[in-house]
Image 1 (cartoon, one colour):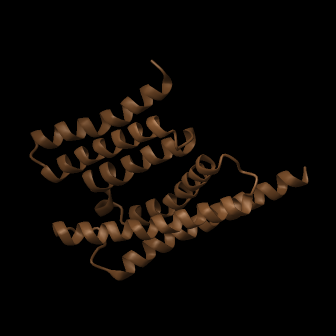
Image 2 (cartoon, one colour):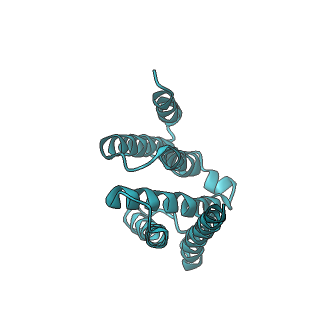
Length: 184
């Protein structure tokens, strides 16, 4: 069995155990979030296997992000226990989505020779995802009477700022790295 398969199985087993526990203890919110986590993990695994969009690092970053946000954050209620958890994940998401944006750019264009366009695409992709995620949270909150956005425009805006700000930081690191490599 390959290392990748072992890691994928491990990532699915965690919320599966949470699902079983939640069903036996009648914690239906945790059960739903565990099931949603499994669904999202499997979806990413299947999509990436079919289209090979993500390289190894971004692939695992997405899977771990899903686990930390949906299963740990909502299912285990870490968002409630550790209030900055939400902002930390939104901040982390900027780095992940810049990386995914670069993967998509390379997949669509086949090269990375034009660093400026690739970085602009990756930054735009990451910022767009930050905004789209907040639209998703707003929609889910209103449809299912949840409180992902804590009923607050401030929460929404700080989430977008955290994701967009870390996207800019990721691009600045990339530019610094490319500049130092070019000098060598």
